[in-house]
Length: 338
Image 1: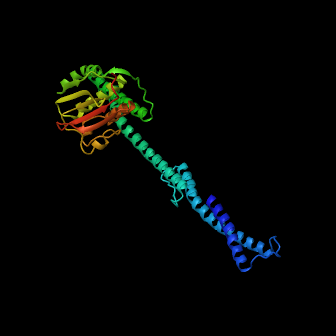
Image 2: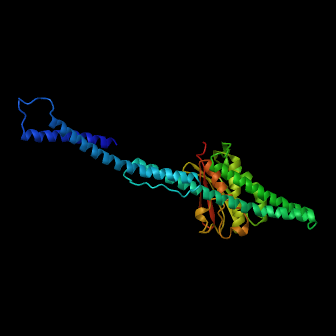
């Protein structure tokens, strides 16, 4: 609009100058001529101003149309999204209008993110319902069987019920951890921790059950102190070891702790078969399981819980095949404390 105003002013100014120059060339100004503007002068000025107004009006209308079309599309799409149609998108129109095009682009990106979040929420709800259905169905069937006298309320039956309750509690806690981490509300009790000692204590608890299932837990830990939440780090390591125990072949599970490039690194390594190509790129996403994972149990939340805990510590986690064709999970934490 500012450009149109300037152009109109320039048309009037230079048009008047050129017109009077032509007139003076053919009809030179004489000393007897009155210095006041004559009727011809007013006509010339009026015609030039009229032409300038027409040019400015045409240019302004075209410019306004170029501005309003994407804004009208934006308003229409916003109303459709308000009514629940998350697939609505605005048309950017003329991309030469930088601010308007950027506004429409940002709006469409926001709408796409809303649509993706809604789809993810639907998938989460369906998956959570599926994961809860199995233990709840078993619990209901067992309890109803005890009430009807089909099952005796002996220790074996009660232990089976406790296992299903533990499965539900673990699923709820995993969901809580992932949800809190995604929203940035995962509470951490950060303090200086000697990671080697914490890992050794956890290994002493896990070792008997691992041995009974044919696993050998091997530790190679350096003495390093890092500011972390000890309980959450134990939770992440427990999830990684449980993942190895559930899916790896019987053999050694190595846990190493080292300092590389001033970063404390924890690695959990098993002897195979590692993650399949169908799951490796998405291993840390919630409810992602390989084609054979369902045969081994689990709810598909273990690795996503580990990632949530590590990211809450501003750390990194990655997966890579191990030298023995197994799985290697590497956690990079903060800088060690001298």
